[in-house]
Length: 241
Image (cartoon, rainbow, N blue to C red):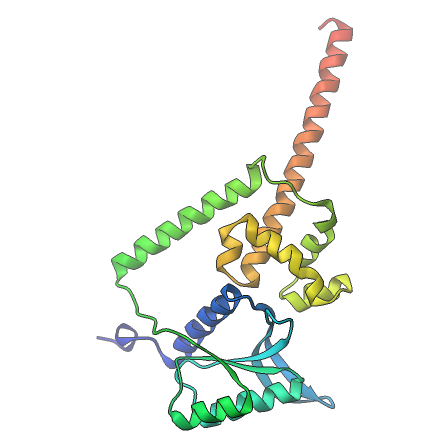
């Protein structure tokens, strides 16, 4: 049995934990503003945090994701990076390594969100999950494109274009010369529009925004075609065709 069949490698486990952590943040009221944020002081890169998030309290958090448990060294790293960025410290992990780490985190004001253990599924279960997810995604895509009940607020158009063209929330806000918080109503609307946006992070939000813009383009083409057909019909009547 090779190593891949025994479990995830350390790197793959960390990436899996990061994806789960970002999704968990999104579901608990945090908005991922930027991922893998470089910490630069006087032009010198001195570190990196896994994410910057805007919390439900309208405060910015420097987020560190740990694939395992959080120890004292990890707590100090979270706090120091947050201080350098002028933000609150937040760690996502599978609990504390020991009581010392927990006490230090409490003393230094580190918010900790604990991840539940993630169990791998066998090949048949995975195939079933992937098939169901793909079918749901296809169904949702069609619904967003053709559902006559979806009404797009005109005031959201520039926001939607910016979200669709940006890699993260911070970049989208910068394109619009707005604060990140100004985009949150549009995010809430996109989440209300589709479970695709509710279940994922920024990439899912961007996908739904792109689908809404495509929907508007298709509507424009159909409206133009309808007008052309009406004009052709009137011309044919006048010519007695």
